[in-house]
Length: 258
Ligand code: NAD
Image 1 (cartoon, rainbow, N blue to C red):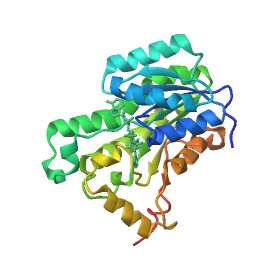
Image 2 (image 1 turned 120 degrees about the vertical axis):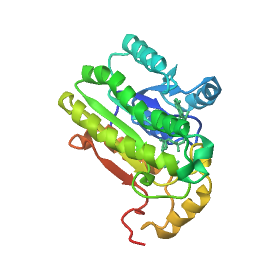
Image 3 (image 1 turned 90 degrees about the vertical axis):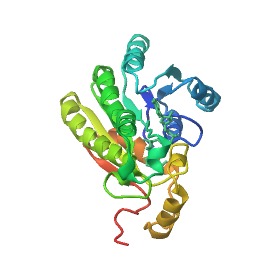
């Protein structure tokens, strides 16, 4: 495994022990990284505080609602005064109003569309802009985000989140282009379905899990550890020549014809 000692990483998107971001935090911590974890609100702060004792190195905990510019500015101003640069950023925040994940896509309201795209796609742009100077301080670094195949293909009830993931993946390419000259890489992991808090918002999600189990090349669902393994590759120097990419961690569902 890569040695992350001496590295500092910001991880956004830990809600509870099932969060993909939490699995990434655990693996990065085990590899020796020092972490900054953010929480969305006071309610989730308690969850994150309960998880923290499982990490070897006590992380810095800071609030950040990614839909609020002032939270993002405050986060990076605080980090600038507390740490000497960042080596990596994990963006694992997404949200769409529940009704938009059960009604037909054609019914998506302007407000639900705006919220989903704001929190699930624009937030990556804002976070990358805030993090870039801190990553540049370390001579470059790696930013990853989390996507889903619903960006390219239609899945029942994924709806506006699929549109948001398409915007997210496109943003990854534009950010990779903007930040490449500073040796900052930007990639996304497109994960197969996993039962998490966010996934529970998608109506009929267990049906999607079953289809993956039946059809994926590996004949199983993935877990958050599978995603964290690929994340460690993308956050480490092993992937130093990779940027602007979507890496699929889906037990081989995508390549199958049927
Ligand atoms: P999760 O519910 O554990 O994580 C989603 C996170 O988004 C939570 O920590 C939540 O606090 C955060 N969030 C939502 N709105 C926010 C806001 N305004 N400000 C700050 N944070 C906010 O679920 P997860 O499945 O671990 O999701 C992580 C990422 O992985 C998401 O981008 C999700 O779309 C993506 N993903 C999930 C799956 C899956 O099947 N679970 C598959 C592919 C991609």
